[in-house]
Image (cartoon, rainbow, N blue to C red):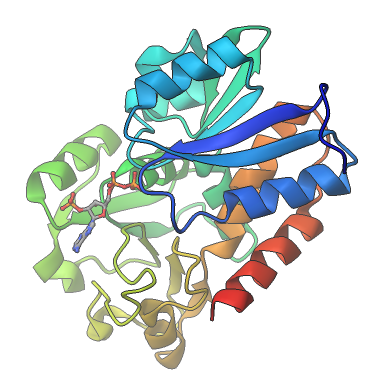
Length: 273
Ligand code: ATR
């Protein structure tokens, strides 16, 4: 690909960004679609400055990640209904100078789950109360899933439980949750701390569906334990690819090349191990 005066610029803003595979995934997708576009990582503590830069330089689209998914909202001209309801954006589209925010995390998680299990009527324990848990909880509630929230800090956990209108459970009391599906949304167990796990083994029952949104490593300690206990497991790769594919669709209005994106991320993860 040749970079020239017509090259469109996209990127990700967050802090820290060291672990992000979004540049690898999106650059491969742009190339596969034959687009004259590049995607860069903007690791910055100055999110306001970054978004001013997006406007001033005509950057076409941004991914937004930790810790800016909530704070970015007040800098945008418009926020779509789902992102507004969730209270977090992970995608910005620069629509002729108007910055519009979206949330593709929710749909990404939903697609990854629906590939493996039926949702309606199930009970789901959400572990964590950050932006990811909020997005996943919101969309699962819309799908008639009965939710329970567990979190390290009771205050954040109770706030999310109130938002989702569901019970809060302390991390020490997880055995009372009795859920069909468990979704781990915290960063505990992420590389380089892959020996950590928040969930006690004894709450993992056979036939339970256990999803970890971490994709590095692909199989977290939680997922290994869950497999050993006879649970069905879902790693974080599906959600990551699906949320990225929806971003690609929003930016380019084209069908995302999912297989190319998956291969790019798998190859990058394999190189790291
Ligand atoms: P994101 O937007 O990606 O979900 P976040 O808003 O920073 O990220 O939320 C991180 C979640 O991981 C929170 O639920 C956090 O728990 P607290 O609310 O108690 O901070 C959880 N978390 C992070 N590190 C943790 C740890 N070492 N032990 C337990 N929970 C942890």
